[in-house]
Amino acid sequence: MWIWFGVITLAIAFQYIVPSTIGTIDGSIHNFQIPPDDLSSAGIERYLKDALTVLFALVWPLYVGINRKALLYYFWAFMLVSFGSVAYLFHIGYFPFFIAGIRWIVNIHDAFGLYLIAKSQPPSLRTKKNLFRIIIFVLLVSIIYSFYQIWSSGSILNFGRFRAPGVFSQAAVSGFFAATAVFISEFVLSMRARWHRLMIYPSALALAALSGTRFAVACITIFIYGAITEHFRKTGALRSNGTRLAFHAILLPILALFVLGIASALTGRGDIVSDQLNKEGRIGNGLAVADLVIQRGEPVNFLVGMGLGQGTNAAAQMDYPTSKSTKWQLLVDNTLITTFIQLGFVGSIWLFGGIFLFLASRRAGFQLAPGLYFALSLVTQNLPEQIFIVLALGAYVGVRENLWIVNWRRMAIQRRRLPAFRSGFWDVAQGPVIAA
Image (cartoon, rainbow, N blue to C red):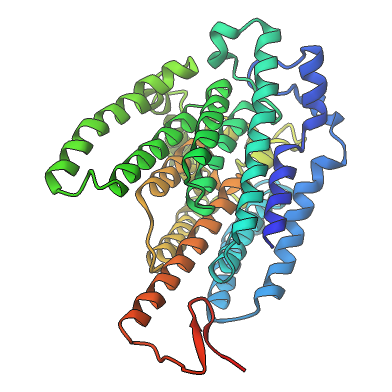
């Protein structure tokens, strides 16, 4: 199954490699994205990601089997789709958008499957190295493409505002990939040797800056802060409470300054906070759209939304000129508000409440840096549609829980809480194994 994760990583990254290569060579790629008309030159590779997503969605339930946890998840997912269907039963909205909504439901379905697999069968050391090589390869190729796009446009001194998409369809997607690449390397693959970090951090930060994505620069900066903290903790430099307090008191203001100020300067764009809150920002526009639904919409719109798929990226790409989905997607593109538009108040509570209860019940808990990464993702994009990020979060929760189980069993063995077998040994991953 981890082979599938490596293949879909390549499929996500290179689904538009043909129009990207053509546009990079002839100089037709301009600010932010590959021209929409050029995307039609993408061949069958454009649909490989979707085929792999659907295939995994069908296969993993057969691979994992049925248990109590899976049954609870199926009920939760069924109710989610049910809430998103109510508006269409009242003939509100354009029904083909429902298919666009099913796409992000499938993404969450795949993430849960990857969580179950990672929990019981985490990647081996060899698999980790191969996945790390794939991620580095994609980063380097996209950096080369991005730099050439900026160079050919004469925007070297203003690269952040040019926002080169690299091998991706849009610059924002390029930045999201860069941040997620670091997240996977650090927290899923645990590739934390010095030379690993010297490869992943500069590459990801360079791609994030070339794409002009402030979210990516901010997240990578947070990961760097975590890596620095871990290094000093392992060396014993942060043993005392006073030393740790002084360390964070000095470094945290620098981190905040970088995230709020230097990240914007590096990408050549405005302040990340004020831009989101103003009239044209995702949060500002999102609140205005939500208020419109509440004040002028039907009661059914407030309770269960305007239908699954409304306001999503997939719906915005559909050829339906009278639809408001394209406008809402461009104005909002925010997980919280987009979910409210689709599922309403009741459906949103069901979605986020279910995810919160699931994460809160995990014994391993959530680390600070991944938590901040997840929180920022909610307001800077429509997270469920970003399959690479969703899969990474599912794999992270599974791998972390597996590590917790292994460590707990080791401690239990040391304290003689688990039985010992003279004729065999105790395998920390599988339990007692009796020698023949």
